[in-house]
Length: 449
Image 1 (tube, rainbow, N blue to C red):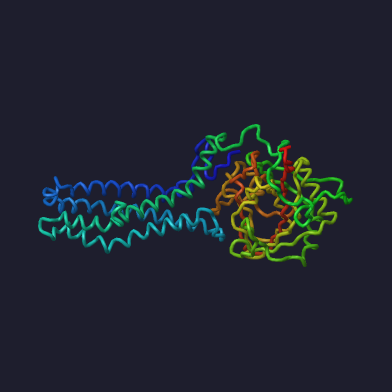
Image 2: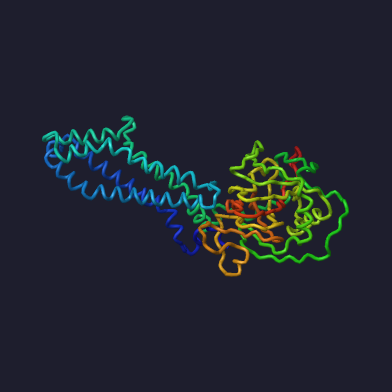
């Protein structure tokens, strides 16, 4: 299944959101081209060989030019601001405000609106040319207008033109994130994909030191402690995506198991943290929830064993200690990755199970904005299909069910499609369970073996 966000790049089926995403870039491109074209053309009036004749017909040209030129410029600016504003509102609709594209749309729209600040400076110069206030020396007024645009002079760049260029560049970035990157991956999968013979789980070893695998505060080691599990596992699986591998699991955890974990975690909750690669901190703006570290009793050990078996008992794969995550009203977690890009330093999170322990709530879906909605109404049992404006795929929180996905490609790099968020809970409480698998190959010795 393709992972394009708004269209399948193999068939180029666009929807209205694709056009709205690209609208500010299209209109600012037109504005930029119009600015460059007029800058080149108007400077021709100032050439020494043309200047005398330019003084004769420049006022009449400006009267005709500003009749339709102003309307075009204002129309393009209005479309740019409208498109930018729409995308800002769309990004904020989820209540997260943390999308990768939001700051770029916001900056581009503000910069586009700032073009209006030049009107008081240039309007008198334009009026002087139109009315021929200098009586036969209108090129001086034109030169004064263009001089306003040129700062600093050694750069030979006009400020409005430069700001238009910056606006265009700012709008290009989210278009790349949401459209160009999936398009390239769709048409040229081998260009960005790892070599076919690359495999995380081969006999190669990682050069970095990794983590201490005996540290049971992070890893749940297979320590030989006996435990009892139910004799049967009745979960059902549904394949959402092959690349990256994403599987929806019905009844991954029984109601008895879910209720047991809910009870054991009641008095253990503390504010959830965010990790920036160096430090841990509490940041309610990015992540508003509570978490509880679970004791490794029989139920938890059975879930660890189930997670290992689901992934085929792969070597060098370790189940991390499990945390229950409680989201009360307004609780959320902005878009983020579970992988850190740290495999070269020894290890990284290979996969994630997002398990729903309790879902007595409204809202609180798990959103993947870079995934494409699958075809088939059957998926609407598990996905939000009501078209409220969310981008990509949003899983409904359903007690006992789980979403499994692999975070890393075969070469150890992370999948950008696994960018995900916990949408805000608008009413009630949601409790999830993170089951992360840490991959850490054996270290090389000094001989490289």
